[in-house]
Image (cartoon, rainbow over all chains, first blue to last red; front, top):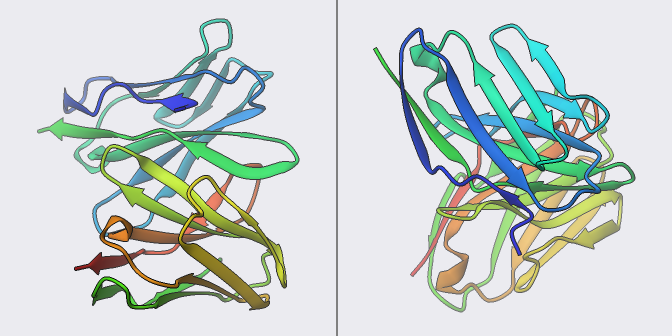
Length: 112
Length: 112
């Protein structure tokens, strides 16, 4: 049972435009959510997180939105840059339980 | 800064042979994790450790065992490798806020 889902395996966006990556989850008890970015032949790196008590968190060009009623998480990248081309994983977890559940990933390609 | 060294980085082995992957951290982070990454499955937790000799199973632990005899080292063992265990294995440590993991560069294992 996939508790965290990324239904778009890939996404292509023109440089300078907004990239929107989506993530859905089924467990309403998750306490926090995160986005990780992964380049080929490297380990994933933490990008941004949001607590379940918030609906938005912003860090520079990256903003994460949380819609708890829809059990939906999204990552907005504005403006998109060629270096943003990578695979993005969303993840979710619970306080007191050190195990994260990851989505299957979305490959973002920024077109120059 | 947190540092992780995974070894070996690449390994090709035959079905039925034992394999051990090593993860070494340069600091004294309590939590360490082993994940595998496969196309269409994202990152899945195999085992994790919350201290010396303290380990627990993740969602895909069958066929794997772990050991942590020192804070800095977390070993993942495949007692008898199978082709389904061909994957990229990532070690991670818990740093910063909830769910924030720092990943190693990965170990690519091919089981023929």
